[in-house]
Length: 256
Ligand SMILES: Nc1ncnc2c1ncn2[C@@H]1O[C@H](COP(=O)(O)OP(=O)(O)OP(=O)(O)O)[C@@H](O)[C@H]1O
Ligand SMILES: [Mg+2]
Image (cartoon, rainbow, N blue to C red):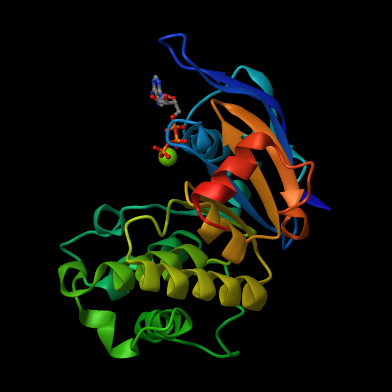
């Protein structure tokens, strides 16, 4: 069943620049989809449309068969819960004045009626929930009282991932979430996303300019160029002759 459906979506900014042109694809439940493309190809614009941060006039985006942005107020809450985001800049994403254990629990505070499946049945304090989330992303639970500037970039990104998955979204959108990290740290974060995807059975939309990172994580790969989706294939078909010339060029440039 498709979770997210993007059909013939175009986006023209107020300066008449066409950032997206007739983009169509789907994400099924539990599927990990990567979008790769050069800077300015429209990847973040697409993210903004999916999150409802930018409007669009042409085409249709739907999530769980409901239009995005939702028309009914009652659908807004479910949409907000079920699509969570991890951005490139983890430093800006965390409030420097708050211990990470507090920042981490913001989504759970907003969705008080949600019962996390990652806590065994029982009653828990906020601190215990924060400690469990830190463990899930491979951090020491004693870090709960630390402030963002006492963490490395990779650790901060793990905290952002923990916060995003705390309410078990159906779809996790990662826009260049590994781009600012050292290559070795990138691999750890990608492996973490793989593990969390399996544990929580969520779908992931992983956006990157780095085709190598995308091939490490994703089952389905979409390639964007100048606002258009030029290729859409399964990882197994990475080297198939019918790949778009631009995909082949990206593979060659990455020495894959
Ligand atoms: N608010 C805006 N108004 C006008 N043009 C915009 C706006 N936001 C983005 N653009 C333009 O749309 C194009 C796509 O931008 P977008 O941020 O989606 O690219 P991207 O693929 O995410 O690039 P990067 O890899 O550098 O993050 C760019 O040419 C950008 O300058
Ligand atoms: Mg971008």
